[in-house]
Amino acid sequence: MLLDLTASSVDLTRAICDVPSVSGDEATLADVIEASMAPLAHLEVIRHGNTIVARTNLGRAQRVVIAGHIDTVPINDNMPTRDIMVGDEPYLWGRGTVDMKGGVAVQLKLAAELTAPVVDITWMWYDNEEVAASLNGLNLLAADRPDLFAADFAILGEPSNGQVEGGCNGTLRAIVRTHGVRAHSARAWIGENAIHRVAPILSRLSEYRAKEVTVEGLAYRESLSAVRIVGGVAGNVIPDLCEVEINYRFAPSKSAADAAAHVRGVLEGFEVEITDSAEGARPGLDAPIAQQFVAAVGAEPRPKYGWTDVARFSALGIPAVNYGPGDPHLAHHDEERVPLAQIDAVEHGLRAWLTAP
Image (cartoon, rainbow, N blue to C red; front, side, top):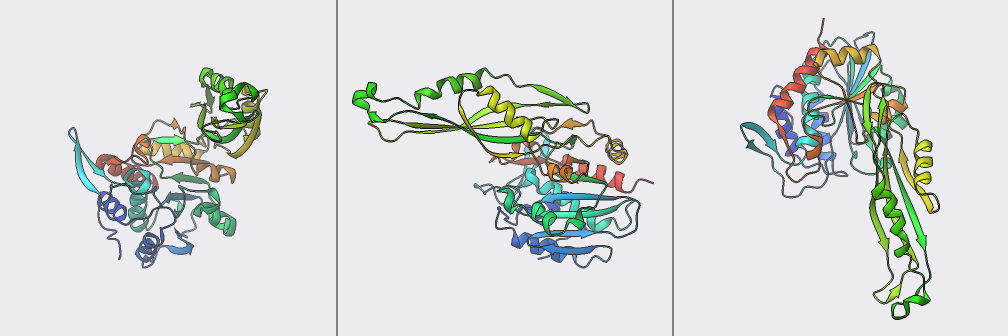
């Protein structure tokens, strides 16, 4: 199968969404993208696992990475795609339309058509974004081919309602444990109930007020939430252990170490184990090339609350933003759908910037 790269971005979105590519099963779509890019003489095409890289080598003064992941979360009776109306507006409905094959489709079309962009472009379409970082195709590519990440700016096609979302919040997960003493529930007073002891933890979290932290002009909203509770032995046993999993979303002005210290401070007096963390990314909008991009697409920059792979570029010293069609609130939703007009608008914005005199 080859993609018709002369088709509209909407039709390309439909075509690639109808190729299932749940995380871990992206090989078929990667094959299609590689085969469709290979004949294009103006692109050097490189394959790394199920990640496809296509880049121009025009000797331009600046280079930009434009990336998108090709995997989706599991399908749940939302394939194949179909055209629907929401009010008076046409949408494309189906798994991946928002997160993030609409953005990938725009990139594929522009990669084929822009033979002489004003900057050199490295296009990256990668696998396993929706799962563990150890499997992430962008992460693996950076480890093996750091030379491909030489760039002055990066754009990730994550859904942003067709607006520019700078940087992203960081994320941290922790386990908070309470301990007790097992006993028969008929004689509960003999034991000490570990589940009961989580009450003050939940009180602190429910009373926690999210902060807004302004970073380079963008207001990032933080949150600290209980996301899972595990406890209990049997229906007639007083439990001796209970665990509360915590997720902290923190502004990109904080480091992961700062975030860990904050969580430990909020939950002082309890056993806290930090199990995972990922640094956020600063907005990246102070670089002249980023300002030129924002002006060209006519967008008002906003903060990105969720963690995205812009953080990987930021860690490499590359300013990066999110820019793609689709409402992030509908990512992973069973009613995932994207306005056709947003796909066209993102294509127009990128094309205008990449061809500006």
